Image (cartoon, rainbow, N blue to C red):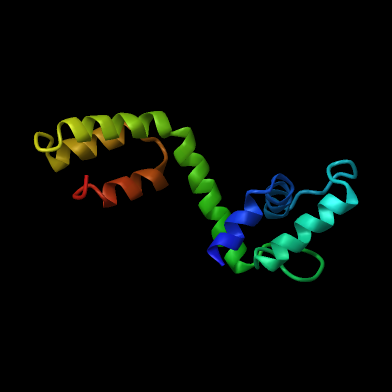
Length: 125
């Protein structure tokens, strides 16, 4: 199932349609050809990301996957800061105390969800 979901979402039309449905936007006439639309729709249904019937919406599983995509997007946007944390912590692993690691994460990372994940793993860093 995991590979099927990743394969589905790796297709441009499927991820675009998934995001449109997630944000409850209207599908514009020229956005997809009929074939592109129905192929993407079928793939999203097969992967259990959207409901089987109209009006199409995300399933509970689809909402979780979409939340994960949003988190991934935040991580990508924060990747320079995440790399800086890796460099600091890797080079000075023994020298930096937990409280200093917390301060560094709080200073570099703005997003609360990313902070929570990083602060939850601080003992492993």
